[in-house]
Image 1: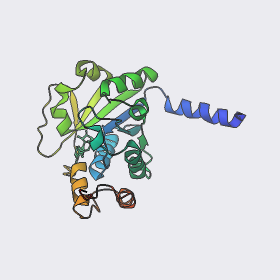
Image 2: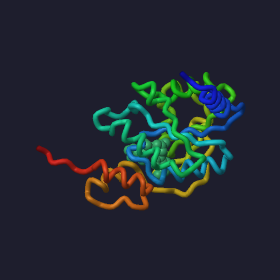
Image 3: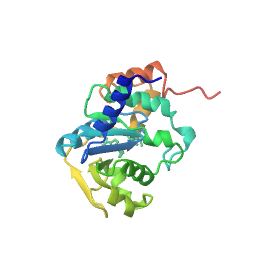
Length: 213
Ligand code: ATP
């Protein structure tokens, strides 16, 4: 049975997360693994746009990625939690993991917006994603639900057919692909991922090249 104070705490938590006109950044991604590029962009956007919080939202199964090639969601979430633990601006958003199946941003944001209509959502994406916005599912409706925020990424233009706020952040040429490759080759990823993520990768022997038989 719930005590009165447990109920009060729950009500307070709901009130706090549902303040009207909250301005919330959402960073969707596979985070396989999360790296300093993600953290730098989230911090820069949060600071420059004066957001109340920035949520990291791991996808359940990205629409364009073979499920078998993606790390289990549990490991990706554990790494995101470790990466953001020391920053009060950063939160974990589990909406896509809870729903499961294919993660279309339009479906996710429609559901979040229906639950919190007063909240303004800023969807943060790298320049590589901005370039392909026209291919996103229901993009014409999605741009009415969220404001897109772009971060320049090496090798991609800063033009878009859709409205995007470009935030001036340092160009960071780190990718999860590069991290996985380095680990598999036995190289260090120190200073490319937070120490807690590097430790997690080591402890769970992630991305190490496996013998073929
Ligand atoms: P992968 O190499 O596996 O494709 P990734 O490094 O692009 O992964 P994701 O988790 O797929 O990481 O990316 C989440 C979001 O962060 C995407 O919008 C992506 O464009 C953006 N992003 C990732 N790394 C950078 C970076 N170094 N600079 C700018 N944007 C980035």
